[in-house]
Image (tube, rainbow, N blue to C red; front, side, top):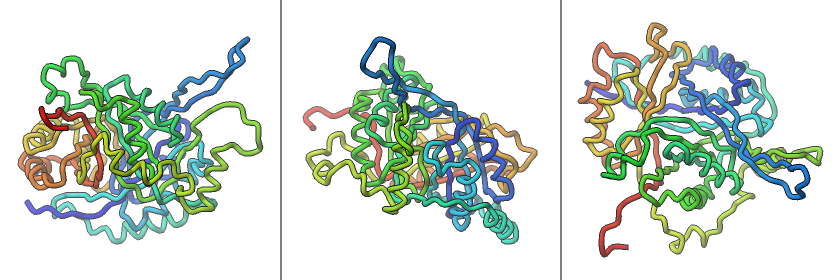
Length: 390
């Protein structure tokens, strides 16, 4: 089988459940290569006062959201972003987050469509979208924390108190990492929480270190963190909910200054010294890749096992639902899918991909499987240190 690669744009949209229908209706006619949705929740800090108690108290407040993951040709990326932002009113900086990444799709050569006319029609449909005044931020990075069930709120509170963005939490099932911990795995549940953050790229490593420390991820079985680049987006930055005493909220002011400066560099948190050699603990792993495998339900286990035999450390699977029919997702296929994420060393790319081929990822007569590869420059997980080594 001959495989080909093509560059795609992955757009992630995290919107409150009430806004989801408007955003999903805006997807019609945009020519998505693939699209999926899953339930999740966002977490914010609510400030409130108690009767007969002078000080204020803070609690975490959860809100249900839908997390949409969409794949498009790179040439329509910005027009799709603007269309979805307008549909959901996301320019208000407190209603949801949307951002895009660059990924590489691997697929059989025969599955690559020509689609020139369809692409032109999709571009025209997106071009006709209503326009509003807003600026997309480009100096961003993503942080994904994969944690045992119950630790998501711990890391989310650390992120909120650091003033990053509103975390989005979804659920999944882990495979592999817990099995490598020997007898400890009996105390580590397979159910996982995935906490996703989008932050200024110049502070991403410093923030990740604070998350590792605050969540005590340097202990065995506490979790896994990796960073990934983001092209552009707009974020929900309403971290705190409380009384408003001014005509504009602080999140509206921050969004306006970001637009004036053309980025987030003005609110840098960590100095160059804090990113230097003295701050190299915990040690991050470098030069990694994120593999996103989307398959019909029931086919993931064999593929993950083959990938682990070839050098993948583990995987996290989530249940998602297909959004309508696309080029790779005909209408007659079941809507349920399993989305599996693996982070592997770049040097093991070819061996893992060969193992997935051998396990029948794109076997004849099996439709609906997708594979994407994206960079993950930094990651951290617990590693057992050998005697005599620091």
